[in-house]
Length: 487
Image: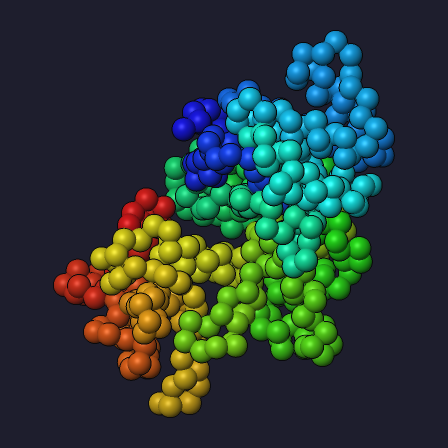
């Protein structure tokens, strides 16, 4: 296994996948794709990989085809030990020589920012398809491990889609995502769960944001000043980051409608019909926009755990939510250096529309990634919200967390349901009583035995609730401390 450098934080699973790909002893050249949004550390990871295995790496830039070929020829010559640059006349010639690097054994070849090359040379994927044909030289006589990397998500994903030339040619498709909330806290060096939660709710898990945010707040006492200095300050790069993420995706040429959908989502409109009403448009007109936002990782669609075709949409990237709710709405004031007032007057918005939804997201992520089987009453196959109809109250009750486990050919069974409260008020006994009522509304066909009740509280629990829960095996209390370090 390729040694993982200490400089690379986390990414153990991604590194393992890459290591297995480049060290594979299978005959013939192989192709892998690595992609994800910018600032996730893809280039660093691949540079370290190439260094560890003695591979070749070339980073394309936004320039003409001839200029990129010239730069590639210079890098190639240096790698193979030639005194003068190689003058590649075409991409067919260049690809042929790159794939021949693996004639003597497994050799890693990385092309970073591949979409830049495709933009000026649209035929490049087809040329590569020909070079990797089953009876071609590369497949018959080399063991080159070619990795294409890029940040233009749509372009990269389409390389292997539908009738694309490279469909069926790749053996690795690795999507590099932001750190999960626990890894993000460790990466930022934050040990206080409340501080870790607040930072994550505002900027998420993108690795590069640590440096872009001045290293992060050291203590809770310094959190508000850090927000004003690094997030709400027009002199910092983070000020426009939430809007820039949309504009740096080449497939979105007119972002106006996309921005409007993000604004509606941030304001609390989560169903397609609600978004359409907020925009004054028919819901049928939103399919392309919602699909595009999902494709670039800015929003998620979460299906109802108990009923089909009742999915809701949510902002998947915290900096986008922050930009829509605070920065975009108060930009003139912030430019006028009134960040302190804007932050103070936005306390309710931050609590209800940022911290609250984010805490629910972390509760679901904890169930899926960190909770053990005993806690959940089974293995979490999926964790989603749901709405339960109630005849007694003549309404539908929202459930923040529904844990389901796939049961062979019998579909799914609900193993646990939960409520997540992201306010600064401790959760009390009536919350448990509400969850007991909701458990009684679960469809009989979806349960076996008694589903567990999970209570997530950012501010902890009252003594009365703790005393009751201590004597019950069907109740689990999860505070921030357990969320960040327990199972």
